Image (cartoon, rainbow, N blue to C red; front, side, top):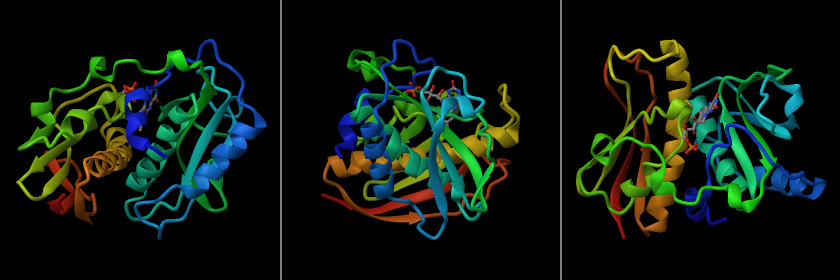
Length: 249
Ligand SMILES: Cc1cc2nc3c(=O)[nH]c(=O)nc-3n(C[C@H](O)[C@H](O)[C@H](O)COP(=O)(O)O)c2cc1C
């Protein structure tokens, strides 16, 4: 899977219009792909199911929803974000439109003792409905999310999707290490309650780590990754999430 190429093509289909129909064969291929997805933490049990969108509260015109269930331990939200973004990018490669849908609920809030986390709604889309110029997408300026040399990576990874486009990440490049933080502007209140924002932003950080690693690998960087527990209650602005040490080509 050339994940990097799909970063430029993917986008959120907030409403699915002019959809085609996903065939049984395409769903089988998707299920096979899902089996190959890599977790950030293989110790956390997860299940990924596909149900008709009509069996969820999502009403965006998708044909199916991919439901993510997990043990709710350690950094399970980040783990689901990391796994889900692999699927989001795979879907784009197959001309399957996708929407990470945080506010949705499925019929079954539990599967085999695992809790529901989030869903992605999907529908087969004509290829010309995908993103044509990623650089026109609305994102924070680079200077707000990246300190130090951009390595040709920051310019791309800044297009990572996030809940309500919050982009809760900051990267510091010291020269040989990248340090990734989850960022929350203190006191800033959006439309969502603080605990919901934190829940989604933890998923966003997993999505971001997968995108960052895809970009690093595309530029042939080698690294050692260290992950840190995201325990902050957001009274501080920046929570340490990960370090990518010993960057070398
Ligand atoms: C974890 C997560 C949850 C999201 N939840 C919703 C949602 O509930 N409703 C919605 O319309 N879009 C949702 N989105 C889509 C974002 O609004 C979208 O990714 C962001 O605006 C960036 O746009 P793009 O994906 O087209 O690049 C979600 C995205 C993420 C990553």
